[in-house]
Image 1 (tube, rainbow, N blue to C red):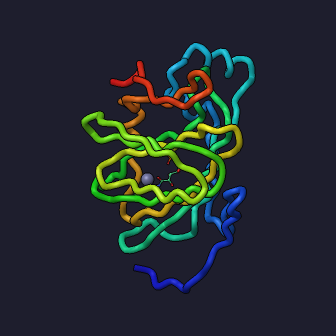
Image 2: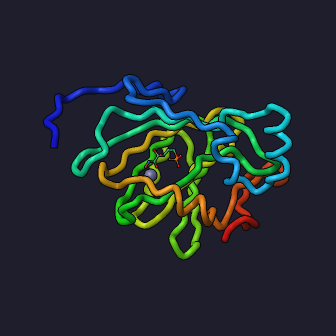
Image 3: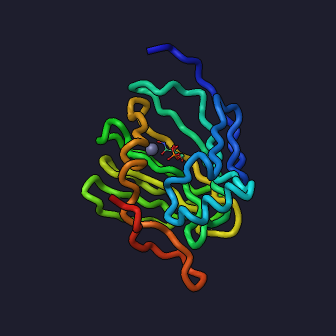
Length: 191
Ligand code: PAN
Ligand code: ZN
């Protein structure tokens, strides 16, 4: 493993930006359109030139190799596709037995987790919530509030990110707004 010099980052606790970051990832609706239930609405939005920025990920300069602890911040913007809240793509770790820690920084959200057998659990996240993603659980975060939802994450460097499984099956449940409340309901697109 490469011998690194110690360093620190500046994390803006109110906004969720991370400096320095090796890379900033931006995902728009068109980058994850198959993740949402209301496909008709998405087609209409995109054809009408509406392609909102859903979330940004600020990645630390820490290499993704065994022994390292890469970290990031994620900012999910407020919004919905129909009744379904803006969210991340979500993934399993390639090495399924690798866990992760999330720390809520700003705004209100939910962390939705799913085992390979389709069991779903969710945790509310607010500033100061330290949420634990145990080994073997896929994870996705959802902005269930009205302002940007930001959180910090740290994971084992050799975890790897498997997006394909969730792209193929989806999550068994989705977070929607019902009578002004965020609720988990069955996802009609889950296979
Ligand atoms: C997080 C996520 C980040 C973006 O750093 O990668 O919140 O979500 P997606 O990766 O699902 O697009 C993490 O869980 N890292 O392992
Ligand atoms: Zn992860």
